[in-house]
Length: 228
Image (cartoon, rainbow, N blue to C red):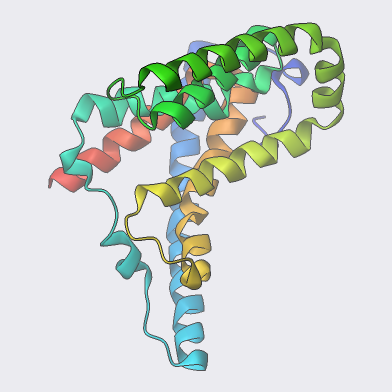
């Protein structure tokens, strides 16, 4: 029986491809059910806050500032974006040395370059990024045994931090962020946290590819809906 708890795949026997695909689409179904429920609850909470404090802000006010999906190339939104996000937020959850290094290097590159669409680093920034990358590789390699013990000891906490950071990162898809309406942003990322939970669950039990596949399917549906 497939259990939706964040447990590493070492605890589970390998599934057939058919079973893995079933779990992907069943997870997709559950994601949409939970998002529908969370959106309904979010509207109730926002209406209550508006009533109590005399405000009139809604989630629609945030989504009006959402970066336009139709302005993002389809391939980038559906395939490249999910791949990069999965590498940064979930590849390292295997706790393998090479996966940890790759996840951190991708994250560092994004911090310096601010996009994966084009290379924007100037000479000085590139040198700093290169030095930081070398330091990262040496540090992870040298202290890997200690890091592995820490990660395995605190694996559940690491999984949840990954899910939360994945959700929070989507706030930066918004323009004109006003943190005085912080409660709206918390409710805004709930669907991403739900999605992150199920993707992480697949990543842990079935492997990186299956979590990535679920992410790609979700983004494909999102892109097609926005084209209608």
